[in-house]
Image 1 (spheres, rainbow, N blue to C red):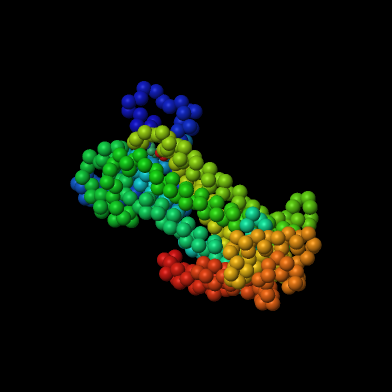
Image 2: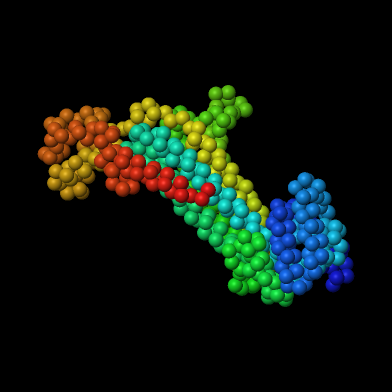
Length: 459
Ligand code: ARG
């Protein structure tokens, strides 16, 4: 027996029933579904559809279902098509005819998207909180590593010396933008669908503003067709999660390389590494590899949703039932990805000596070109002169900083005694105190600004 089978002359094929059934995954919406129904029952009473006693029976019936769910006492049936039908069946079993009146003026089309929006709002706010926690870990790392000078890489080739803290703070900046992407998705989700009905709007004059206030939505939808058809807030959420995944995967990649024996710049804490079943010596950075790996899943979930929507007319089609699994999956995984990454960097050991030892004097080549520019040489000529000097060093196997002044002067007459002032990592770094640069003062300013932002954060 189905709630909708009045016009059917035979039952659904068992395979079709299994195919159609969304309960195994949409049962995750049970709390939202019950909250939405309580608000709907209240609205029906105010609209004169329910008497006070009926509303009372329905609301207490719904609350008893919620209690039983929380105590693990709910039994679903194979014939429950989805969470909405399951809750309604349980309600009718408990409160009889009053339960049969609950769906008045409502469709599963506006019901499901109300539930999903409630779920998304909660999930996005949790993700935003986790991003703030990660930012705190990043700032903590930047503060404790202040003073560590590391090779900065472009093309994975040593480029210029940087403060390691400057590297960490780059993540802070990215996370600021991730937070605004998440906030944008949350704002898109924050619209009440109930009252939209199946497509045309409810035929009963419910007070939608009151329902929105009760459920915590900031506004009510302006167009019922849009509301039952649109899943843009899911796309935006999945896109924001994919973005976080992509960026953390890039940092994970760096740290995986830095934790190799060849680099040995960092060592992961044992608690965030795993061993090999065969090679006893192995300590693998699986936490970071999974973070990198899960970015594929997060991107995939975005693509699943975008592909489902593409070419889908308006308004509701059953295709839209495919929106929930990617959303739930990404929410579950993004939380783990963010939290694990935060713990990994908090517990990381920085191998300062190895980092220092690997600083190659060629990292100062740009500073030497800048030196010639300050003496009056056009930059292009300075670049060429230092390029030749580097070529000579490679050929003769001498360090850039060991070339005697007379030799330097063969590359440019402008070299003087004062060139040796360039030969310090600290000076190279602190030559870049420009806003946003790697100089100690600039990085301190970034940290200060970050701490201010974190103190103002709502989380
Ligand atoms: N389980 C469905 C979904 O997730 C609920 C909406 C069903 N609506 C309908 N018209 N069949 O999309």
